Image (cartoon, rainbow, N blue to C red; front, side, top):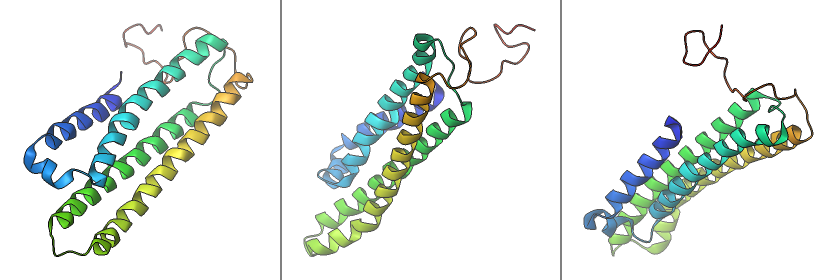
Length: 169
């Protein structure tokens, strides 16, 4: 597991611990806040672990390198930006939604209108993640159709630097 995946797990765990506090839960329960939390844990952690496993395993199963390191990087950054936009928008929008729901004088349709910009941001985040998945799928099929070069040893996603453990001159 790399540092980026650990960040998703840690952030999800911290947010989940905060949600367990009665004062926080009174605001966030039944709001978009919990949706953001669930997606951070599932997408921000689990899916990144699974994609990492596929990037590691496929070259060994197919005996063929991934065709493009840049496409791997593009997939990562689209997915990372997407889940960040998604999570932040749902967290902030859900918190504001929860505060508004606690005010008995606020009409429900005003609360709905309050959340619309955050739901639009959520759609943007989802679109970025979807675009990342399309990049991954195309790259996956390119690798299976043996585009690129044959596997020569372990698949490496960055050049080794002399002096690094295990590097050979």
